Image (cartoon, rainbow, N blue to C red):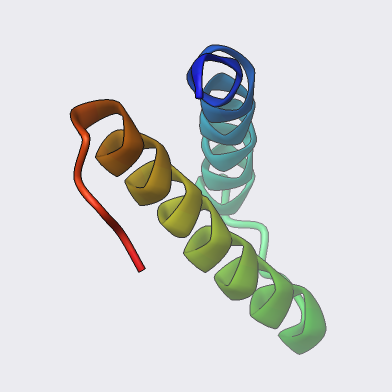
Length: 61
């Protein structure tokens, strides 16, 4: 668990921030890229929730 908190969570945060910066500059993604971004944001959210729940001892499904 320490590995996820130490390495995976910061990497996901950084990727999420970089994607947000690109989109906030007015770049309009294609439909395919837009779908991939949506999927990725969902995956990042899942990992962040999973890591947070694991570090607090809660069970997540």
